[in-house]
Structures are given as structure tokens and as C-alpha cells.
Image 1: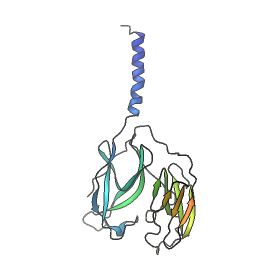
Image 2: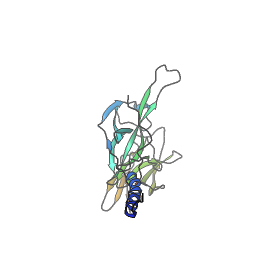
Image 3: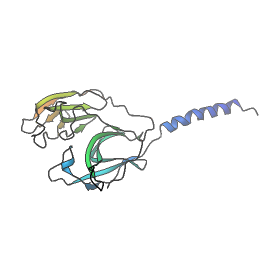
Image 4: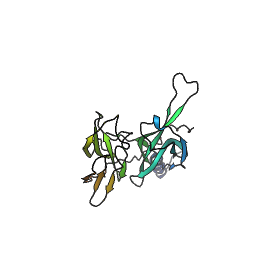
Length: 234
């Protein structure tokens, strides 16, 4: 039976259209309700507030499946991407322990795409989980960082998608064994004119004028919802 040319053209059109529609499938990405979990500040290099005995966590769900556990507030970078800090559950069992023990800790920052469902860990320059408290503005994160030698405290502004910091200035020397907690307060942003204020402990505040560049964040259009589900908390 001979198939009309118009029918063949229509079939070819829909054949090409279906993969494109599948590739742009929109995912449901939400943060669940907050809950408290047992928390040991002594075992958390990310540091804890004085008297903190519980960690508030929320599930990060993609299409109803828990992909990660998070802690703290999320920050919208664009209308489809946000950053949030990961909560880690580490095996705290010693070789001689008969029963398994687990400990919650604050982890790295995650970049989440609401459309593609893609989740990626951010690698912030000179970021130290025990010292750095990130203040987000647009696609910039400002924090006090520690150099690789561990001997200097720096004012750092990192831009998502850029490997090198857009601002990196020494604030003071740093003693890892004997430093105040916190070593640096959360930086403060100002929009007009754009400035960033750093408050290292025991030092005068330092203000930097900041000239922003173009956003370089690449938002995925593909379908990537993560590899596996995160385990349930205990």
C-alpha cells in the first residue's frame, strides 16, 4: 500500500518532535517540611552555633523522590535555579563499636535547577566549612575563606560558573587552633552603589566596592534528575 507523501511528512515531523519534547520535560523540584535531627557539634567541622544540639533539615525532592537532605535557607539565583546547603549523614562508627552510629553534619552548597532537576555541588574558592558563612546576592557568594596553607583569612566573592574568585583580599592572619568562633560574621551586601562589608572577629570592618560582571551561569535544558535517592534520616 502506498502511503501519501503528506502522511509521511507528518510522521517524520512528529518523530523529530517527540525526542525534543522528552528532553525538555519539566520536573517537580521542591523542598520538604523542616524537621530536627540529633546533632553532635563536636563532630562537625562545619561548626555549630553556641548551644546548638539539633540540626534542622529538609528533604530536596525531584518528582517526589528524595535526592538530598538540606539545611538552612535556600537562595534563588534565577527564576529557575537556587542554591541550598547540603546536610550530610556520615558513618560515625568506630571499628570496635557493636552498633552502628551516624552523625549529621553541614555539607557543601548545592546548585539546583528546577526545570531539569539537575543537582550539582558548588566548589567555592578557599571555602572552609568551619569558617565560611556565605551571603548570597544574585549569582555571587561572599564569605571569609581560608587559604590552602591555613594561615590567612581572606575576603572572598565567588561567582557561580567562574572558577577563580572575582574578589580575594587578605583580611588577617589565621590560627586554626586558636581562632574566635565565628572567625568572621556573615558579610553584608549593598546594592547601590554595590559594596560588600566583611567583619573579621577582633578587626575593623572592611568594605570593598564591587563592579559586577555578566552572569555566566549555564542552566541545563536536558533531563537530569540525579542518579539515586537519598537515604531516609534517622
